[in-house]
Image 1 (cartoon, rainbow, N blue to C red):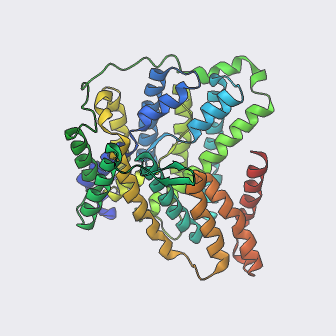
Image 2 (cartoon, one colour):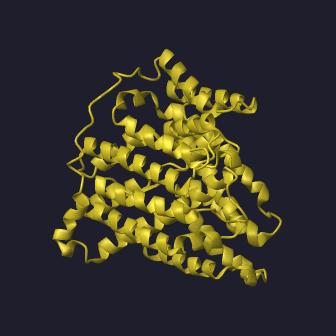
Image 3 (cartoon, rainbow, N blue to C red):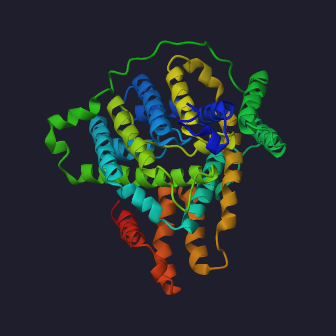
Length: 432
């Protein structure tokens, strides 16, 4: 096991990997409640989606850990589930079964692109400067998510503003940030995980986090959603239309670049990027693609790589063994769902905020004195949190990069694939 996951080469051990996998799981366990709630708005069975979410996350994380050996966990993606429920089903009036077919199609296309090496080639063609800023932008994005989920930052008259920091849940999150920061400053291994545990315990003591109502519960029935993605094949007319094509392309685009950004960010933080290339990137992308297909069959929206994996990396994870641990924990969550009630947003928010602080350290590698680099880098950085989309941040920055580089007389340094991405991103904003 140690040899397969290269523990010695990467300077890690079972303790660090297990702790990292556990930290990642706790950081993203909220999806087990949020995703069913989101998709139930589209008419899907809540309990069935809960099971589908756990199974998709488990299988996806196991694929990533075993096939690609990366400490990256997967689960149905936030944003993509909202698009699925509110834009596709409720907005366009498409049956949720047909929407699942769209997810299935996008995953199958991903598999073809991954096996052909096209996805890996595209990621490796992205210049190092942009990879650095994508990682930092994702850091700001997840920190912003953490601040909002904790109620520290809220919607207001000025779009966003300071929340009511005297409320119990928000004070608990602030306490968690302080404790985690102290543990990290003291260089305590696993400080982020211990910070989450301490925050949860303090929350239960003061009645801000409910005590679990039980330990074990029966696994709900997944049959209402399992295999529903194949029902649309009985009505070809539902698939041979422009609306369905737009849905598939949107799922395809957002998942592609969300995954690319997450891979670059997590691998960069873990020190796994070699010569501006991601080792085994093809395997990682294939694992992500297989997870999307698996999730669609079980009955959930697009499964994708999670930026919360950076919390596990910060806790010490360096290999795919951590993802295996996370995958097993998602399977166990099917039996122990009542215990997950203690993992509230106030408990997970401090981890996201601290990890965001760690990830922006890559900004030191940006050539800010060169305006042709600084402008696209800044746009990536600012658009990710403000547009609430990793893919949008990447798109805006990657559109400006060829423009500023050409004007600066550095056109020869632009990889041909970047020109192709320029056109694709323009089409994305115009048509999707």
